[in-house]
Image (tube, rainbow, N blue to C red; front, top):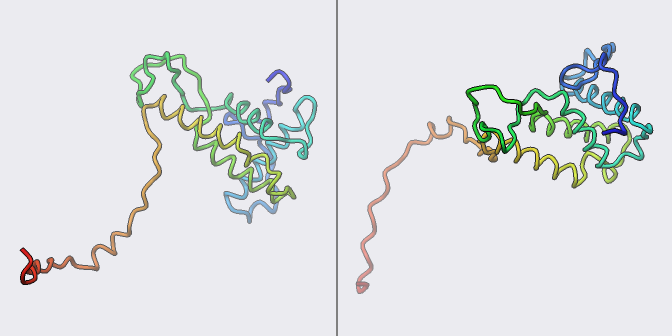
Length: 185
């Protein structure tokens, strides 16, 4: 991280998102679109402050990973290390010196927004640095590390069936079993 010039903290909030004056067109945009724009502006500012400054066309998955690690400085999620006595406990009973990090879900959502913003700003899908294998593997690694540190496993959510469908179809009793055909014993 020595190659990164410190960003001006006055323009960065505690969670690492740059603050910008709202424009008149942002009042009609959705919350998601506004967040995507703020994230994109933050990433572009990061590239501008990178030493040496980095053009978007030269940005790779490695630069995206560098950016995500930079954002960890502003994280609010306590991630216990394997040597911590509270490693694997979701609600530790006492404070510990473990670092704060960005939560996996926040990073995952951020990458999704930046991936979309890249293409909306003229980037080609096949050249999208936010969709590289390295970034996907990093997110998986962060998810696994954080789930082990908290003792909570991340499993895919099962789709819930609408409860109204179960109420509309009454359960009928099963028909009686058929007698065996003659000569089958």
